[in-house]
Image (cartoon, rainbow, N blue to C red; front, side, top):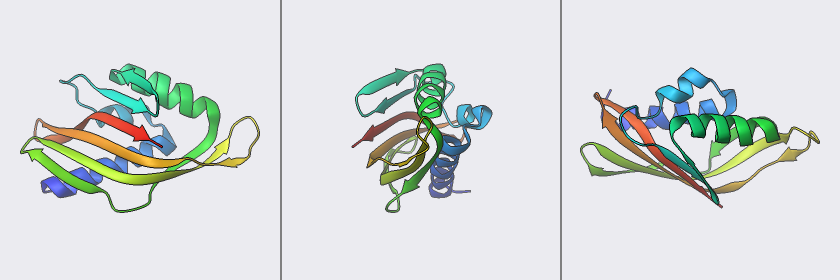
Length: 130
């Protein structure tokens, strides 16, 4: 699999883990050697444990019965060098609020930064903006 195919698969798997919240699959997406972070609008999560426990389980799981992350346009991959890439795409979500069972969604721009680690692309940073 070439770099573009691997990065495309990384994005698809990430979107899947937002819906499934599969912990092992989610953790496998992230760098084990670099410091990782995620910014969701105005809140920052540092480290894979915080990203999984506080963001994915704490915010997403506690607020939404279901959530689907959808790309509104094909993601753009920009290589910084042979081992670093930026992935950018517009997104929206289709959610069911846990407390009211109402349909809900947000939209914005997502930026992912990936690095090549042991010949595999891994996430080191994600930023969601509205």
